[in-house]
Image (cartoon, rainbow, N blue to C red; front, side, top):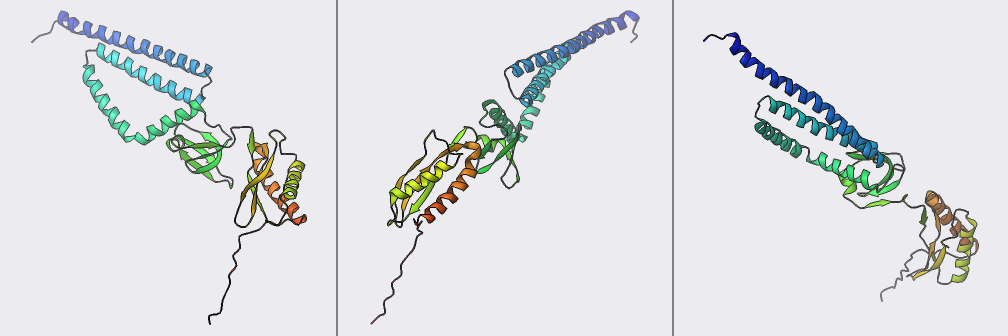
Length: 269
């Protein structure tokens, strides 16, 4: 079979036109995809979203739009896009199943960034672990403990558990339980404790501190002591108040009893 110039041009020209159109769709579509992704990122930045989340969502959006542009360009060349989509769908499902835990951590990371149950520098307890937040990532949250150990917690474990944020509010209440003997004067003990609290400049006057009888226990009268302090002063004030109350009660001759048991021995016969 012989090909003349007319037959060659009849074959080349339509394909050439398809290739040019497909190339134009790819180049123009790529620029449009980039512009849309940048526009969405700017809108998210104006909404004060975390920069890491902005970049990640922007990257995902651009990738999806880029795939759509490639498919449109390939379709222009006459390739069966339906079969290609089926292959991509199967591959995406397999990848999704393989990365199930990672995707769960990512989703939890997005929720943490969006709802902000804590921020960097807060002292939190989550999933039974306590520490100061150093970094909030899309897949894990980094903490350090009081003895300076690094803790890396998967975000699914953080957001899927009860989160206690000790730094969220500006003030905290110190709860102490002080036991005195049944033979001691409760009124005097309360005056001494209130005097110790009043001398500590870190204790707030509003709300006013409370000292009251909490219970009549087996071997002591238990007084509940509840002063309020700034959150940053919580531990230092708690330790100092415990020590100063103990010393002041000792000086006043008021004892802090401890559980004790009397054993009576009888001689048989």
